[in-house]
Image (spheres, rainbow, N blue to C red):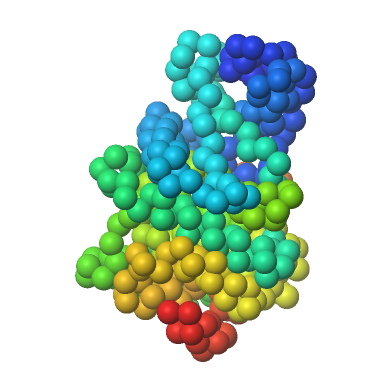
Length: 365
Ligand code: GN1
Ligand code: MG
């Protein structure tokens, strides 16, 4: 705690630190909410970046500033009609003016402004929430649609490239020693069944059907902030994975997380189900802002994107389980296995409703 206080003070020229508490439930970084005795900035977000996942944190910070300045510029030129608001977290400087602080132990810390009067949810509450979550991603893509790709660094090479995750899985599998179990067998079977299809988006990219654009990289439903008073989306947070990519990764990630009412941490993986009506509402919200920058091919690959992102996350969790939990934070040894089963079951549910999901995409297209 003393250590945390010393780190927080690095980012607080004015104001006394009243409280520091753990915040959110990220699987990668450590996040804290700092409360200050200061009229201007009552709270801010303090994070320790996981430098095993992000080996070049300075690139992450560069992308963050580039994109949040771009967004603020665009919103200034074309403000939203109140009570609509859209906010991009600001990077708060440390005492020495830099955008981060490295503690004596070598940890990389940064501070971000807190978005007031807003909250997040791990699962979708209702249709309106679903539409707003879709709206948030549409807004995000739209605001970045004119940001030149060259201005964004690749902070995480290989991120969302499913064939690369498969290669890594094969390497891990060749030397893993996890004990035999029906759950592990289900995981092995799930990957075996789908591996030849897993390059679907990368192939479309190589064929020139899908092109790179600025993406969020991690727009799962609990990264969408909702205004506590109006229930409208106000921000998409957790911006470490902003980089050039396929918007399909984002759309797939929002839909796989939003249409799983039991949530990705449920212990009842056998009953996990994909809810197509939530998918319809998310896409409606998304398309209300994204329609004019989508191509025919973009629509054509939406179903695959939804299916793939659920499968890919299952594969990533499962691989990490087999590797001994080296990437995602876990609270017990089988945690990543449990998470993997949820995503594989979700993938199955998506596949069994393929016709209904494709019909929804067609209706809205
Ligand atoms: C990780 O840390 P968090 O929860 O924001 C992961 C995402 C996964 C997500 C699954 C950099 O994000 O890709 O979809 O867990 N982030 C990284 O909950 O790997
Ligand atoms: Mg994240």
